[in-house]
Image 1 (tube, one colour):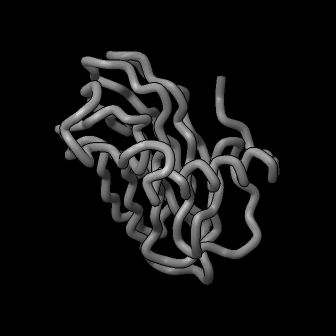
Image 2: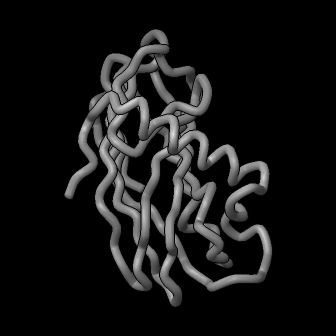
Image 3: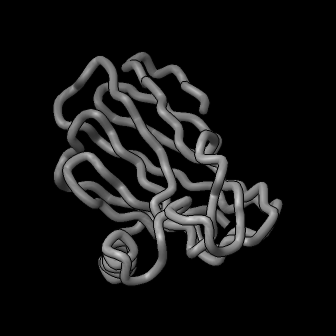
Length: 164
């Protein structure tokens, strides 16, 4: 199943509320915040492409294990601000001028999650943008290898695909 574009304000509000609680410590620790809990190894691989201020991103989450992740949320942060009004895919919500949060959901040990696809419009038409992707919530699982769940991709306004 793919994540599809939708303007579901109820789900968007729920995602933002859940992540906000996680950040202030009300729900679950940030991935790798301490050494207690099951161990998992989250990774995100995909591509980004920019043309005329529009950025398309698609990626697939993976859990290399050894434990399952009951729920996860990924943050996508752009170095340039996003336009105010944008349609977000189901499970994704804005969290500031340059940030989108997307719920990944449950990931089995050594499992692959559903692909996430989104398109955002940047303010103006910058010649490049730095996209940073990282896990902000892992449902209590600890990730000791944070290198593969943190991605930084410089995307030039060429229409070319940049893989991560």
